[in-house]
Length: 159
Image 1 (spheres, rainbow, N blue to C red):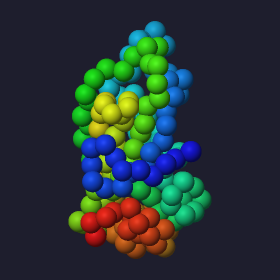
Image 2 (cartoon, rainbow, N blue to C red):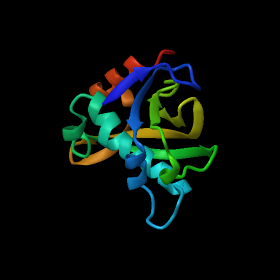
Image 3 (cartoon, one colour):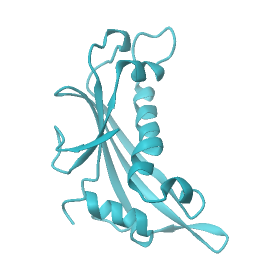
């Protein structure tokens, strides 16, 4: 279940999900006591594609890949400390926000993972859209895909 809240580290509204220690452990490699750098990005992608987008963009699960596609053009990650799943005693939070809509060609997605008040990982993606036109996908503005446009405008406080 998700929650909408004011994030710890940003001004934009944030949609958050709780990750129990058991859930975090499912992303870890057997035999390694800590989450590796790439596993943080895997968690972000999993929650973005499995929960965040389908929960909030009307018809996403049916339309993505058929009517339009969303893909990551670039991404930047910042790691603030190691996470040892076996040593965790409390839940983590993963939060998604749209900090701005300055471009029609792409939009940013900012993702933060934190344990209580401590930021553990931050990931910023530049996402682009393709719409199906006739029988092929072509680059498109996010504004031309109504369910994406409606969601982004509802989430960005700076438009």
